[in-house]
Image (cartoon, helix red, strand yellow):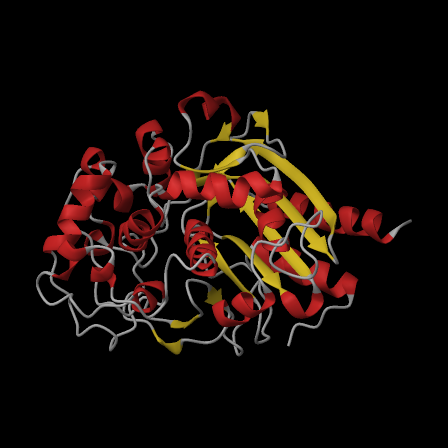
Length: 371
């Protein structure tokens, strides 16, 4: 049996076990090692009926932030942005009410003092210009740069509007042009085209609420039932660069694989120097939003070295998780990229997350250390 066959059997056994226990429903897993896709597995169903497919796009919550951060890094490489520029250089109206000295770096590492959302309806949340006006009028909760507080939902408009003004393209279009097109990806969207709904999988929610509240979310629908919110067509088709990417594990693993080693099929989206800067530790502290330790690079989450994580416990790994337990990341030292997307949002401390179980098993088989 080849190593790839062993990996396939190993991962499928883990996924089937989680499904048999009723913990998970549909899960996609993909991984690259040394430039080759070595895992590409789908298990389970969509809401217990139809089989989940490898190219079905799943609402991926905050994994969106990693792709938005990647878009920013590409713009920096093109000399369209600089990390330490004041936001008002690109977005003058943003400077009102004490925000004139906020930098792009502070937005990327969630220290800008703007973790809360305006009170809005779901329809209003889907209106880009309206949301940007809300953030222009907002006053920081803390002095910019001082308090680490995860901008769980607000991040998308804050970072996204800077990117839009600097590049002349919406985040949706920039991602398609600069990330998806070079890699030949057709199953990754921030703002789902109306004709692509047939390729999507619906989320379900286990009912256990996480740490986000109405202040962070801005609309009660997201707090009450995040899966129901995520399944709305108007939400999926809007541009919310913090939370509404529709994608597959296969597509995400390809993106992260393009950031390490020689990339994918000769395509490497970021230089090694840019990646090293993006994954450098910008803050390591208890986060005011999540109330837990959070380690941040420039727009990417990094593993806390004393905490069990799907990303392992080594410095240098970078990526981003999503509400409910999905995750995608890259490990430059071992030329490894991994993504797990799933249809059931699970927020439980009682069971090892499926992403951790699978990632640890794959690393063990490949001889990649955890710490």
